[in-house]
Length: 336
Ligand code: KG4
Ligand code: ZN
Image 1 (spheres, rainbow, N blue to C red):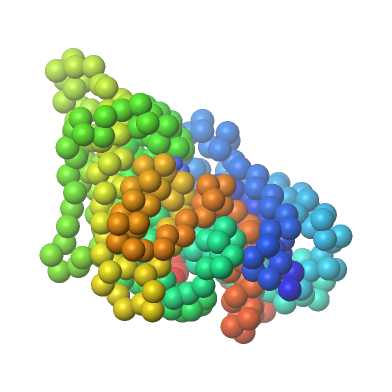
Image 2 (cartoon, rainbow, N blue to C red):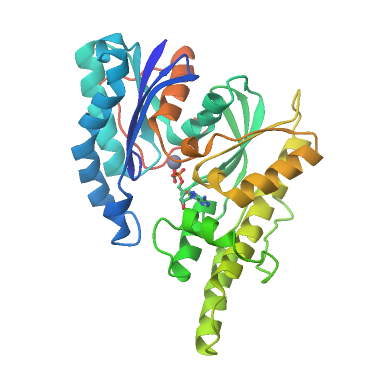
């Protein structure tokens, strides 16, 4: 079955054609980074307009290898969560395309899509498993019992992991998007140079909090400025990354070891899954705990249409369909 996936929830306009949820036939991603760089973050109004300009060309390119929409069996589109104006562009375009071509339309939850990126990189992977989802707007630990059944074990109580990397990068003057810049800088720093706080909740072992570590890096930078001490940016980036990655790793491993599963399997997904320190730290911990680890290849960690087409395939198989009244939502639980 051939599915076209369309993604426009944030700052990438993306479309992809995927066969049977696993095989990527095309994958076109047009990023808006250079547009938003000027402002130090995503400007929602500008993002919507950029999606509107790009979406038809991106979808046309994605359809080229299959010879057009006529050879597609279903259209999947991200309809939640994300920037509402940005989502509406993809949803409106997908509706017009699907219904004019007489194809079924399948709405896809963006964060479920991030998990599905692991199905594309690991074609043998099947639920049940635990998923650590770490993106710019979300940090969750989830029990995925089948392709469309999710149960949230815990999540962030304040900032998302990606958001904390982006804010730390801003404090260090690295610009947008901060995550990849922090990652690169951390490689030249000492992760033990500064101890940033790690937050634990006695009553909620799978919940996260990253606002403390964010405040801590802001205070550290201000103190250095006031005492005219030069900032060792690589050391700060490495120490900050270690604090965030340690918490994520510890809780993900605890979840796999705690929740009953037929075999110990962990998926790590979302933009922050591209982080080199997180990938190596969690690989080591998984190995030590006898856990099979599945992380998408780096280009599939960030937003793309292939992950939406893959999850769209499984949503289609479970009977999910949208009619012409399909709407977009800025927030929506992954469990729905
Ligand atoms: O999943 P994603 O592409 O978009 C959302 O759904 O939010 O995630 C984007 C987030 C941003 O916060 C970005 O800074 C972060 O993922 N990110 C990284 C890395 N690459 C992207 N964070 C840390 N290290 C990276 N290498
Ligand atoms: Zn995303």
